[in-house]
Image (cartoon, rainbow, N blue to C red; front, top):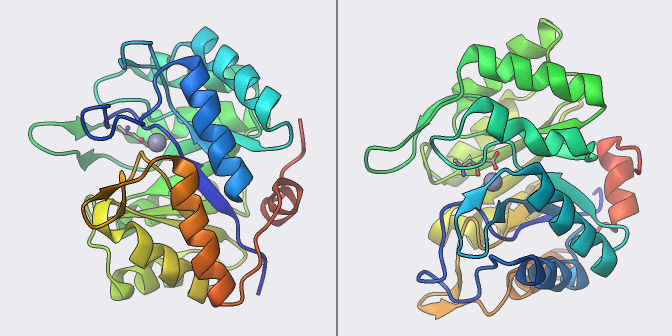
Length: 272
Ligand code: KMH
Ligand code: ZN
């Protein structure tokens, strides 16, 4: 089997220090969490940034300093800024980190309920525009899909020229769609041949989905954005602890861990 790409989603836009005091807000904290994940075996950092008080922001300058801090600590890691940002942000706000020409960025392929009254809005025009800008800037999208219909959107938009193939998908399970073996198998079965995929199980589904992803030959995303616990009732001290757990499971199942350069090869990225 191909080597395993581990993505660490170190921060997110929703979790706070009330959920886990180790959630990073400041530039130094974001650097610290990226480094802990990288040292443990993550080759991609999925990046949201915050103001020092924890407020989520898509500010380009904040991304620039956080990316510099991460690169200082983890020179070869792949940095994947979010273009999802936080619920309620405008498209213009969300797209800002793409202006920094990252190797990758997320591309959310549909609208979904995000808890309570919150709706994470991604209209067809938003998706097409984000896809077009990413093609123009040579940024590889990680296509975030929260249900199977979003895979179908991505396939359609690829046919219409808004997304380049081969596509790389992230199945985010346990938000809109359930996180079960059947659901994951359905998603894997639904993507075009030649695509790559990773799975992010949310909350208590993080490690079961990671184990399934490893066994099925896909890739894995873990981190505070998706889950703040190392095990039931035990808060993770760092993103590194979550990545270490994935590495242990992978070793037991005979999957080697990809370095950032090996991940670049698997995903067809050009180092910047
Ligand atoms: N924070 C969510 C509203 C992404 O990074 O692209 C969107 C999100 C997905 O986290
Ligand atoms: Zn995210």
